[in-house]
Image 1 (cartoon, rainbow, N blue to C red):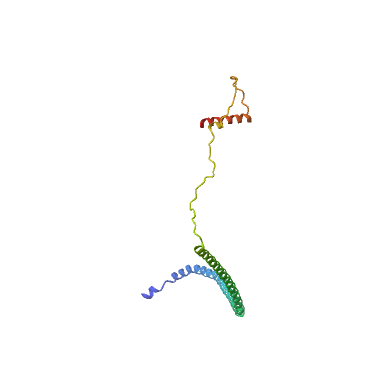
Image 2 (image 1 turned 90 degrees about the vertical axis):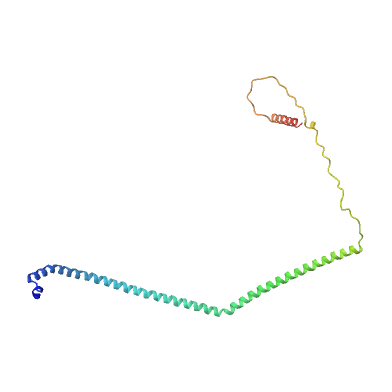
Length: 206
């Protein structure tokens, strides 16, 4: 029974095989067609990787050359510094000695001027003390008036009288006339108006 169950009829197997053959043929064709594309892609990727590695090697070589050049420049700088050490020390020594000598001379000048000032001040003080001592021993005491009487020197002010600013002015009136067009005031009229205003102001003050 087991062998009968495991054994399929020939027609069934043939039908299944014929059903699968077209799909298998198409699958095989697709595999073959895509195999070339995959091979080309793999070749391109391999070429890109090789180019990337070569580029890295080139960059590493350039970086190594730059490091070698920088190390050579540093060594050259150190050699120059070692060779010019004595010269630089001498230049610094001369510079600082010059600065010290200048500062010393300035200090000597300041000290001399200070001593001169102290000596002159002491001499003036001794002279003033000697004069004061002489006044105490040989001088004559006399009375000095501390307060003087004030004498006015200004002239007394006398204000002007009220009649000083008075003056007379005459005018005449010829009757009413129709108003004429007003002409521009002359200089004389302006002076007369100003005089009248001054008279009125003085009268108000009186």
